[in-house]
Image (cartoon, rainbow, N blue to C red):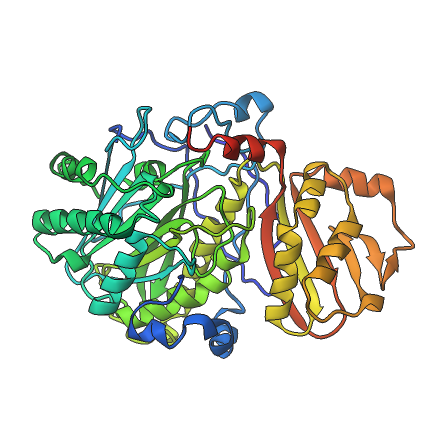
Length: 500
């Protein structure tokens, strides 16, 4: 079903770009912490926000802030799930849905999906990707204290190989394989070994990811017994099916696509993601997989994915809960014919950097649009903070406040709750200079109720599906933007029976 989106405003510093062409999604042919890994990533880690600020300023202030699109369907249309969205049965498609884009094949990437049987109902729950020899890989992962067996596997293998020659990716939905100890780790190893034998590569060249229920050991036989049949369906054109196969409580598959120019050569960037609840990423999102046919050395690729995660996936939140399995993997096959780039700051990568950030931001915002039970897409910007880090902490505190989020759900411009959240962020603020604005309407100005406050106008604004809240805290020049959604009764309903 094709929906006509509208456009929201984006950050002032953002560069303009054309939105990727959208098309009605295709039904698949078959039912088919984070810590920066490796030696390069080890020096970044928890100091990333500060260490990379100069590079970030130089490379991305003109980074893409792709215009976001809202759905314009009727309630009857919203209740009809798209045919290639086999998430949890009974969930109505988010009213904030965006259509899946047209994603052409990426040279050096083959995709297949299948059913391993991790769900009781009929749906694809297994994704297999095969990459050309020499593909570079990089990733960022959850910093969650528990973590998961597939996260541990990917971090260890990328560190061991430096991200060189990644050959495959295996993803399953329905079982997170987290908090499963040695049995869970052994299951991951067996899958990687089986895939390595089929693809004639080392087990360390196989990346793994899982999503689903925590505390259940992965039944690896469900994957390995299906490998032969799934492998026969590998195709260069399978991005929509891949996005559907990794869904859990998602109500629509999420994808993004862009083209960029490197030294006169066109390169492609495509990505998919899954996530709806348990979204408050810390160096990654729930699950996201991005591939490009550009030729980029692993160390440079790692720097790029680490850098742009900060302004994309780390700037969205649905409910303030971080997953044990957060994984973002970026692959560069080198099949475009463009020259190989070894430094992230190479001027020939300028357009690529912008478009990569755009793809990541698009995917991150789709997570918010599909937030469990979400009816409002909310952009929260904090200005005048002591530093960008301080501004981001204040913005995240506002965005994750249950009181603020329920006010959005009730279409109540309760600016007092926003001021409450600002104060409890425990960051420097000047109470006499705090201002709160909903869209262009001031609710508070310079520490007091705005003289031009208009309840009727404010109530009318709050009925919009897409909202913008801007807060001035009056102590410096730091700014940050976080995207979030409202908190509704449906969120409780979805999570109240998640395992059933």
